[in-house]
Image 1 (cartoon, rainbow, N blue to C red):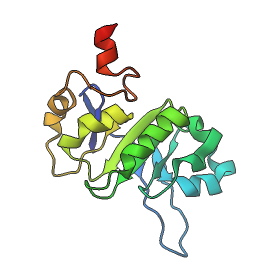
Image 2 (cartoon, one colour):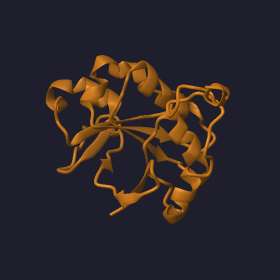
Image 3 (cartoon, rainbow, N blue to C red):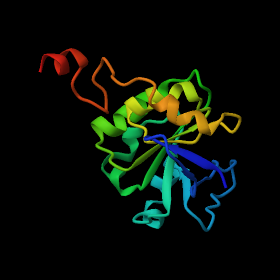
Length: 167
């Protein structure tokens, strides 16, 4: 079973499976375990999936998190896919989910997630990370704790460093 890294650097078994988007003409095949399904398909089948603690969603980097609207906190997990490490749209999606939409549950980074991105993902609001399979998950805690202070305000602190020092 794969493992994920939590925001505090601990590692745990990943009991969620990411369900890929079905090919055109095929239907969504949700397994009999905790599943992350495409967000737009969750919305389309809302009556079927609403209130289920074993169903979360994943957003691709081109999707708008606002589409989840006031239903956002009904989801136990929202994952954001990073199709390649150079695609930074997932950081913006995380900030929108946390700051504008008020998402309070698990926000997970999936896809091309590298160790050197973890600290920045954490500042944007992610609190769990599914690393790319070829990366050493044992090094994650060091990467998450590399910086002790951030200069800017972000989801982890709403006060910039110069104000924290002045206060």
